[in-house]
Structure formats: C-alpha cells, structure tokens
Image (tube, rainbow, N blue to C red; front, top):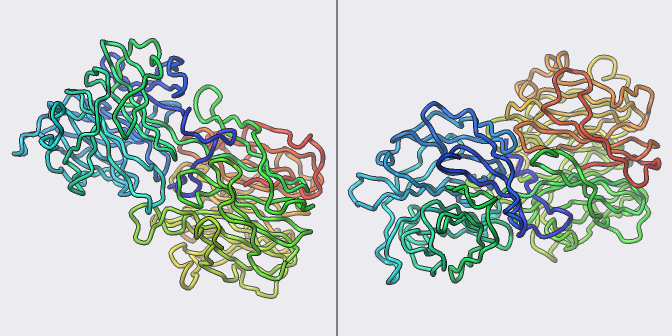
Length: 631
C-alpha cells in the first residue's frame, strides 16, 4: 500500500527540511546488519545500534534506501551470487522479504555496494566495487524492481574511461539520485562517489544503464570504500559518510564542484559504515475547529523511544481571512515536490472556499482560494486527497495528488476532483459527479481515499452526510475520470437497526489497521450520534464480503467508552510510528472539550477500544460548537 504516494511528506515545525533531517547509517564489519540513527545536524549524537532481524540465513545487508514512492526503508542483502530485497522497520530493525532471492551473476567477490532508488523509474540502482571487465565475468551495475523484488537487468559495466585526468579510476562505491519527489516532470540525475581517487562523478549517460561516468570534482578528502551517500529534500542536499584515516564523519557534498565539507564525527567516529539513508519527514495531522479558521499542525516523532508522539506545532491560516467559520482539512503532495501540502476548505457560515498551502514553508499558497462549486454555497465542505493516477511508472502518472471536495449540509452528494495546474492558475477539474445515488439529497457528503485492490490505484469512498443513513459508495479509482464505476454495491456502514434508524450520516477514513497491505475502512458516528468507531476489513469489503466483515469487524467501540455523547467523531489516517500498520487519530465531537486522541495500529488487538497512545488538549480545551476536525 503506497501511503507515501497518498500523503506523502511534510515539514517539522514548518521549516524547510533540507537540513537537518533524520538519517540511518548501515554499519559494516563488526556492526554489519545494524542501523544507527542520527540527525544530520548533530551526527555525533548516535542512537544505540538497531540490529536488523529477519534476514534469510547466509544473507547480509549491503545497502539501504528510503523509497520515494512509499517512504518505506528498503534493504538489499546478498549471499554469494544471490541478492534479496527487504523492507525494514527503522524502529525495530525487523526485515520482511519483498520476495524470494534472485541470482546476480558475478557479485560474489564484491566487498562494497552502492544502492539508491531512481525516483522517476521507481527502480533500485545497485553498483559494486568490482572491476569492469567487459565480458560479464563480474557485475558492477544492475537494477531491482521494488514492487516484486526481482532483478530488472544486469546493465553494462561502469565505464570510467571518460573521466578527467587524475580521476580515471574506480571503484564507484556509492550512488544517489536527485529530486526524490513524486513529480515525474522534474526528472532526476544520478551521482556517485569513487574511492580510488576520492571524487564525485555523475552517471548521466547511456540510459537506462547509466554506466558512463563523468567527472564532477574532487571531494578533498581521502576516503576508503566504507562510504555512504544520499541526496534528499527539495534543495537536493547531498550528504556522505566518509571514512578517512579510520575515522567516520558526515560531510555535505557540493553537487556542482564535488567538494565535501565536514559536518562532524558520526558518533565517536570509530564505527565504519557502508551506507546512509535520509528518512523522509513525517506527515503531520492537521487539527482544526476554531471559528477563526486556523489549522494547527500536530507533528509526529516517528523514530526512537518517543516514536508516534504528536507535538503541537505551528498554525496555518484558513482559506478566507477574517472568516468566522471553522476549516476542514486534508494532506497530500499536490505539486509533487515530495512534501505533503495542506488542502483547506471552509466550514458552514461563509461562502465556500478551497485553498492549498505549501507544506515546505506553511505560507506559500499553491492554490489560491476558489469556489469549488460556484454560487457561493455557504454550507461548508470536506476534502480528501490522493494521487489517483497511481505510482511512478504507471501510465499517465504525474506524481501529484488530486484533491476531492464534497459539500456539507445543504448541498447535494456532489464529488468534485481537482488537480494542481501551477501556482497562480486555477486548478483543473478532473471529475464532477454525484457520489450518492440521490441527487435530491441535501445532507452533503464526505469522502476518503483507500487502497482496496491490487492495481495500485486508490479507490474513492463516499458516504452520506447529515440527514442520511450511513450509506457508503466505493468507486474504482481507475474509473473516476471516465464513467465512475462502483467497486462493490452500496452498503450501510453500520449494520442492523442502525442502518435504518440513524440519520446523522457518517464520517469516514481509511487506514491499514491490520497491516495486510490493504486499507481498512474506518467509520465514525456523525453529528448527533455517539462517538462510535467501526472498522471493517478493507480486503473483505473489496471482495464483496461486507456482511461478513460487519459481523466480525476489526474494531467496534465508543471513544472513551462514552455512549451518551451526541457530537459524533471525526477520523483521520496517520502513520505515527513508521511501522507497517496504519494508525488512527480522532477528534472530539460537537460541544465537547477540544481534544484529539491517537491510536497506534499495533494496539488494535480486539474489537474493543485499543490502548490510548496519546491524548492532546487543543485550543485551550474549551468546547467547540462544531467539534475538532482532523485530516
């Protein structure tokens, strides 16, 4: 499930996250198969070693990288002339094989590998420190498909012959790509480090093998093959761990000149490392509800002993200055720069406006406030966001999240889907249809996006708003921009008598609570209803087994055990602790003290309310007439 493509990244306290950032170094020698975490601004502060477990017998990691398409840490392990790709939980070190091992002729004698994801092709580039013999006896350049863990191709040997005098020597021991975003229009460039002459090179010629090396310049430091290299952020910040005279230090590398600048020792400098991978920044949860329209960022700490903890961060203004209405929100990488942006829509009481604020700085308006329906409807709206075109490599994919707008009370069940057309330009309408098959209904609608089948294209879930029953429609994502087609027949989210008696509508979110790779559907009681949370197995729903999963839901509880409150409960997907299970954040209902509660997916062990991971009082803790919205 490609959650990164859906929300994909964000700032920490609204700073541009080029430097610092969280990085993971892969040890070598006595510390092989061990990860160490540090901040790129303070590399001397090194975490305790995180042993990687779950590797097949005889296999050892030779490189790691975070995949831009999903934000997951991948590791390549080898055993003689065989290789195997794994996903790795950076907090626990647990490795899970993507697929069975595959053969790569001629890598058994390699002692150093360089690995990095090509963000445009979504393939893992691998180089080795073996000589280029030109006859296939050894392999020093190949590609791996992360979707199925298979070998794509053994490419032509690396060609050092064109390097400038003094640099015409290998081996290339580390590689990294630029523009680690999801925007297919930005392209990418491959850079590498060669340890024989301590230089930066580019691998820009001879696609798709990119085996021809071109000189950039000297690093200025004498390093051995124990080298790690990565490029990250919107500014393409390059960092390297170099081992000089037996001491490991972190450096920044100028991609124009090749010059390296020391940042500091990595730990005490005594551990040697074979790779470094910079983590994508975490996606915040947006919380709102004040009639000022402002939105508060809740930033997760994804790694370390505080993994999952939310911290109240900065605020972002709503779409309309001076409006006296709350704001509803979603996150999504609208412009494809690898950073999640903030999609905002006004609530009831003011002419509806939608805007998009850049997640890089929290101030730049990517999409200026606009009326999504025309006519200055004053009932408010809801938003959700995802890239409906699919991941990098999919035909027509552009790496940009569409945003879905639906009206609140007083509006019909209309669904309008927009895409970014450039700063200063009006967004492009990609779809406009009724999500609930009753155009006369005037309770509005709410939406969520969910990965429910194996085609890597997310589905659109639409539910009825206030005044309707908990009716749910699911549209196949591949059909949205033609004739929207239902994936399964419509159903009522809550079974039994609730299906016929409830007229509060329902809130909806999607999160892979059970970690099976398919999003689960999370329903919450609507305004006037209790704060009930009801979670259905998404794979079962997609297979048409709605009644079966309703009879045996993943969870069915009232937040805080409160069955008498009648403010409903708002819901949002989150990835708080960077594991394989989706997490859940809920906001308090109408008239209740302003609060959000976070649940970790790993704590859903029965249908009862799981252990509360965190409660946060917001906005002074006072009651909000419209409740707290999370997105």
